[in-house]
Length: 75
Image (tube, rainbow, N blue to C red; front, top):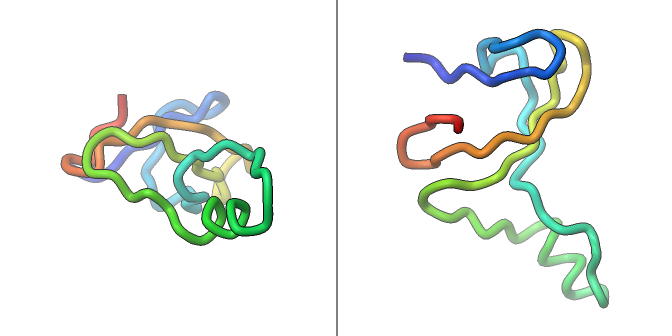
Protein backbone atom coordinates (compact mmCIF):
# COMPACT_ATOMS: atom_id res chain seq x y z
CA UNK A 1 0.00 0.00 0.00
CA UNK A 2 1.33 3.44 -0.91
CA UNK A 3 2.05 6.03 1.74
CA UNK A 4 -0.90 8.39 2.27
CA UNK A 5 -0.32 11.69 4.08
CA UNK A 6 -3.14 13.59 5.81
CA UNK A 7 -3.46 17.22 4.72
CA UNK A 8 -5.47 19.56 6.95
CA UNK A 9 -7.12 21.15 3.90
CA UNK A 10 -7.27 18.34 1.32
CA UNK A 11 -7.64 15.17 3.41
CA UNK A 12 -5.51 12.07 2.82
CA UNK A 13 -3.41 12.39 -0.33
CA UNK A 14 -0.69 10.20 -1.92
CA UNK A 15 2.86 10.97 -0.78
CA UNK A 16 3.82 11.79 -4.39
CA UNK A 17 1.99 15.12 -3.98
CA UNK A 18 4.29 16.10 -1.10
CA UNK A 19 7.91 17.17 -0.67
CA UNK A 20 9.68 15.75 2.39
CA UNK A 21 10.77 18.50 4.76
CA UNK A 22 12.82 16.35 7.13
CA UNK A 23 12.32 15.24 10.67
CA UNK A 24 10.79 17.76 13.05
CA UNK A 25 13.36 19.37 15.31
CA UNK A 26 13.43 22.20 17.83
CA UNK A 27 14.54 25.50 16.31
CA UNK A 28 16.54 26.83 19.25
CA UNK A 29 20.25 26.07 19.18
CA UNK A 30 22.64 27.68 21.64
CA UNK A 31 25.66 27.80 19.33
CA UNK A 32 26.84 27.22 15.77
CA UNK A 33 27.79 23.57 16.31
CA UNK A 34 24.33 22.75 17.68
CA UNK A 35 22.72 24.59 14.78
CA UNK A 36 24.84 22.62 12.29
CA UNK A 37 23.94 19.32 13.96
CA UNK A 38 20.23 20.24 14.07
CA UNK A 39 20.20 21.06 10.38
CA UNK A 40 22.55 18.50 8.83
CA UNK A 41 22.78 15.54 11.24
CA UNK A 42 19.26 14.13 11.69
CA UNK A 43 18.65 11.54 14.40
CA UNK A 44 17.04 9.09 11.94
CA UNK A 45 15.51 6.89 14.67
CA UNK A 46 13.92 3.52 14.02
CA UNK A 47 10.24 3.70 14.92
CA UNK A 48 7.89 6.68 15.30
CA UNK A 49 9.32 10.03 14.26
CA UNK A 50 7.74 13.45 13.74
CA UNK A 51 8.24 14.76 10.21
CA UNK A 52 7.39 17.84 8.15
CA UNK A 53 5.81 17.47 4.70
CA UNK A 54 4.99 20.22 2.17
CA UNK A 55 1.91 19.70 -0.02
CA UNK A 56 3.69 20.90 -3.18
CA UNK A 57 1.21 19.47 -5.70
CA UNK A 58 -1.86 20.57 -3.76
CA UNK A 59 -2.72 23.39 -1.38
CA UNK A 60 0.97 24.30 -0.77
CA UNK A 61 0.82 24.11 3.03
CA UNK A 62 3.09 22.40 5.55
CA UNK A 63 1.91 19.56 7.77
CA UNK A 64 3.54 17.67 10.63
CA UNK A 65 2.89 13.94 10.97
CA UNK A 66 4.22 11.07 13.07
CA UNK A 67 5.44 8.27 10.79
CA UNK A 68 6.78 4.90 11.88
CA UNK A 69 10.00 4.49 9.87
CA UNK A 70 9.75 0.68 10.06
CA UNK A 71 6.26 0.40 8.51
CA UNK A 72 5.55 3.83 6.96
CA UNK A 73 2.31 3.99 8.98
CA UNK A 74 1.23 7.51 9.87
CA UNK A 75 -0.53 7.92 13.18
